[in-house]
Length: 232
Image (cartoon, rainbow, N blue to C red; front, side, top):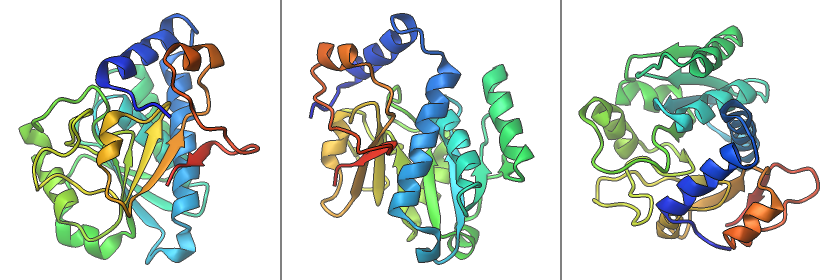
């Protein structure tokens, strides 16, 4: 299986939009749904200390995936709480927030305190930055990154562990160490830097065979009706 560099990841997305005529919200819904199913496979709600999940969403498409995942997780016996500090005027993201709130999910702009996170939640989903991210982390996101760096709770990162270089992986000893990574479309090079004990899933069962062959992705086969593949 091929691990994509940043340029390849961007090119694959552009071809899905331009050549294959997928819309952003269509891919986001499929990606977020697959993330929710992978999380449910890795962390059964009855096995967690509590079924409450903190989902940290950034301003881009990665954050949109997190908002979609929150909505689906709320239908799967989890209780999501969304930290979404930097909003956008794009209609898609406004709709995703509205849909989450209509499901009874709290969506907050206030950075949660570390002690409250440890006491309140059983799992954290990191949907802050995607494969377009380039270090360093902007000042406004440093407080939540400190919470993620200090936590003893398991962290699930969507596509890229936030703060990591998409190709080189963690750049400092302070970068977060996810317990699980859900790669979308295809793994990115940074996934090679996961710890040996980390869980790794592939989600996003929507890649056309012709596109997979063009980039020599060699993706694993999805089982039956599953929306994810467990890689490790």
